[in-house]
Length: 428
View 1 (cartoon, rainbow, N blue to C red):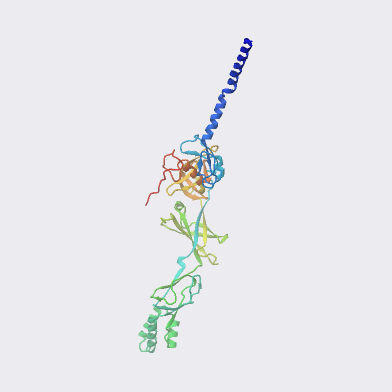
View 2: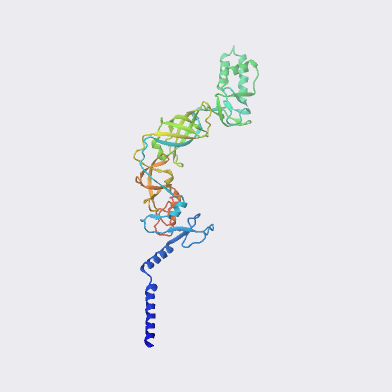
């Protein structure tokens, strides 16, 4: 009986020990998997699809809009210093795309300039008053009216002209005895731009005109009315500006890095937004020698024929300049959308590895503007991929991760993405 009890106790002990070794001790593999999952849980970050600046270590609601937070991806240190990673989900939401840059293979480059139609200032005449007086009536009151040479513009009361007419009538009675006096009086009236026919009419009528007419000296379009009825004007005071719109100017703004490609005498094709199917051929007649310090542009001018009167001052135009020289065939061209400007620096974001969603900030030096892009003088190599869509989103991600970005160029990395130093522009 005692032996039987001993066997039972021994069997129970053996069973406990076997169960411990089989179920009680976790395998090495199980430990590694648990550690990996725990590490993922600790490094997993959650963000808002509408407010990517929100980053939390646990799921929940966005404190701004209340939307459910989504996984922001796992943080990884598998990038070099200066680089940072974004999750695939964040890149899809931001629609981030990259473009590989290559050599400029086209020999004939097109330089595009924006500008507007302006009245030809060389064809603008100022209708002035040749005597002082008061404007009794003005027959042209608004800009845009058509004027013909010899058309009546205004009538003036001029005391000096009234006296001169009286002198003419007196001298006319003495022209046989004092011909020199008569001639001097007539010449005095001619200095006031009175014609022989007007002087003869005054002399034959024997009456003094109190309100004297003013006639247009040229034909054209009134571009500015400078007086009103009742105004008192001095001798030589401008009354109207009359522009001959048979020719007009196309004035363009060229950026500082485009100046080296422009010179007088170059052929330029002009497109007017009001007439998209029409082209105007012209040549550059003037390149402003002075750079506008506020806009950093230079004015370029071309003369256009406007015999049909379709071109109106103020219309927006685009000039296309085909330039085969001045641009190296081997020059790299980066798209305009890839460049971030800070005033002093030009920056792009480069994706070094096509298989890894990592980016780094790169400062570049740019040359001329061609083909909706910029020639690259330094900072990029052929075949490198740059961010061309979603550039500002990538820059915002860099700031949140405490990396170099457009606004915090010289800060030390490793700080929290929510606070970083900002490089301020020097005050002038």
